[in-house]
Picture 1: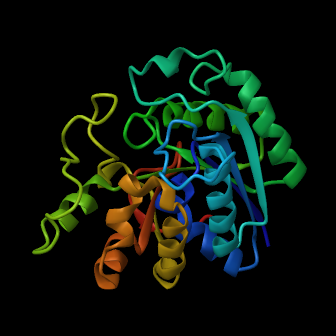
Picture 2: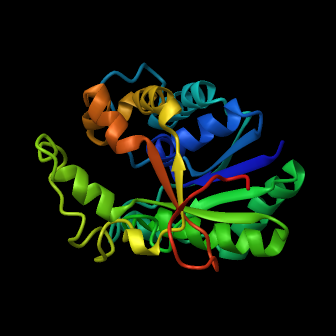
Length: 261
């Protein structure tokens, strides 16, 4: 059995992008480690926070529940401040993840990789799927950490733009979030990655129910999660039974694959 470290930007990112892979790895007996870069301070603040409870408190508790559902063995918080979307004033906070020195942040991740004797590191594609500054920084820090640690397989989770467009073209596929995957995302680039640039299609069909439950854990972020939580089961399975990865320096071509090969 092996160890995989999933490196994510915010609480809830794990559920939406790699929840199926995390659940599958745990079910197959692998050790699953989840590292979260930021505290998610700039997420949606719910109306039902208790006296003395902060949004960070709530999001950490939600992430712990998600981890339990997915079978995560270790949660590690790097504790950087959420940087917000492109152009927000919080981008310039000295304690934001976006402003973090890449080598310093990468060294912190290296400590986890080495302590866990990680076989696989999952980070993000070059623009973090849709250009969020913290997602871009996960890519930069993750790849630098892998370079420093050595002997670890690196995979970059992403969104299959062509699969999203196909799903939206289904008879009931046009009632979701109002966005065009081919149009400019947060950084001005199209959403996700064209299928021609992907390497691994990971089958997580047996784990879509766990993925759905994981997403539902992040109830405070209702604007981001409600549409997916409320999907009919068949439609959710259609959209989320496969998770998509880029493998840097791999020969071109998409194939069925797995984190441990």
